[in-house]
Image (tube, rainbow, N blue to C red; front, top):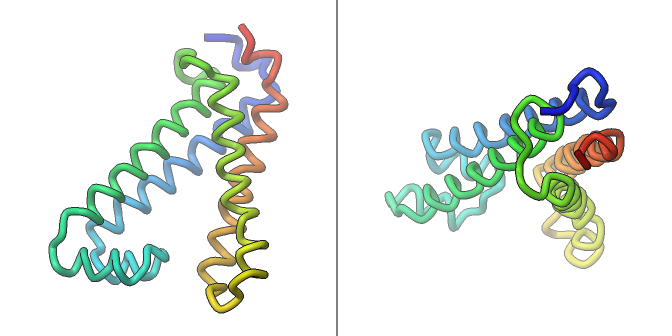
Length: 149
């Protein structure tokens, strides 16, 4: 592992990692919370109804999303020097930041195209993932030189 103290992106990447862990835990909580949780967290009525029927699809989709978020957290922690270096670390962090940022920014054209789909959840979730992306981007940018070794 590289020198954590010398890495100026450490704090940002650790925060980003914990934000991704939090998002993963909220996804897992939806599985246990059931249909009402799926609705509250914006998964859509189809997912909520499928969960109410006991269909395995919402659980599998939600677990897959949680797993991806945990991998993203591992990349942030690796970039911060808290975990061993993961493959394609720089590329991974750039892609993760880009996905979070695009997910947050996609709200604007979607709102202009279909304003009827803009509810408070869409607004808040977009702002939240935009903040996640900004944290990952800042950490990656600040740690860039340390991520090369």
